Image (cartoon, rainbow, N blue to C red):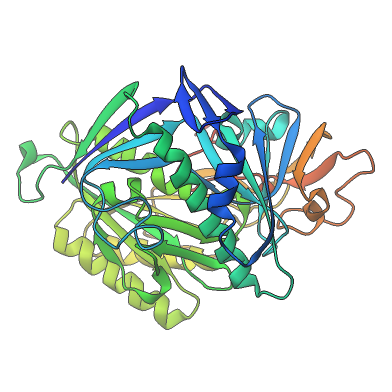
Length: 425
């Protein structure tokens, strides 16, 4: 299976009479895009605004971030199970509007949502502050459930990203990258074999992730080709703490996959990716960890990278995976963030195991930030006091805010897609 990603660099975004890409600018027909989204009867109102890097602008509360992509050649379509038939993706050719994203925003659905500042101190922590963002402000009709609210916004974001992606279909990419794995049966110069075990949050209560349109709490851990995640097979449905939420954009641009591909055939043999769900009940955690470890064992690998999503309850899933995989004689590396209190002196994780001897920290989410007022706000600024990481009194009369790093979208992403890292002293 080979996937060719054609990356079309977008330097600017602007409204125009036609949705198209010209000379590095994405022009957007505002009315046409909104009409693609407005077909969901659960939405009461829709607004569309643009947010550019460096602007004095705050977006809150953010639900998801999605990169516009279009399937140019090969089986399947964009976001299978949602917008296209359930056919395997990860092959053929896909074009990407690199440097831009769809951001969904609107009245709070669950308390664990976040913010994106396009400038100022918080911008340094979020990769999304560096993108040209097309922001959908979506307000649901009164009376619908929170799950319907989340679903309506999720589908709207995917529709908008697919619509914009079409503008790149006939463009000549600025950069082309090919992704394919060496067959697992190949000796690959006797390089150590490495698998990637990716935890997908699936605890319910608006803590959901989807694989080919299926809520992953309904599945057992599954072996997939890493190209499938790049090509839209994994979609976020999470209203979890913003700092370590894996948005759809993260799944499309997973840096662990990119790094393993970069080293594939050089100093390691990347054999594939196992997606494992994150459960609430202890028996379900045991079942998933046992099954994921079994798949790792069947692959016959020497090492595994395990990434977490979420914190607290998912820490137990992370440590179970580590323990069971290490027991097979497979070395593991874990990537997680910390909730160690504002002073960094509290217990960082809710669980642990002696086998976790190689742990990468991507930051402490409890650090307090003082963020200045912005000239413009998209969404509902008052929600900053009730989302996870905010607190009563955090919103000042002048519009400045005091919050934990936890509220910043992607600030401590457990895929390593952030600017924070741990250094040994």
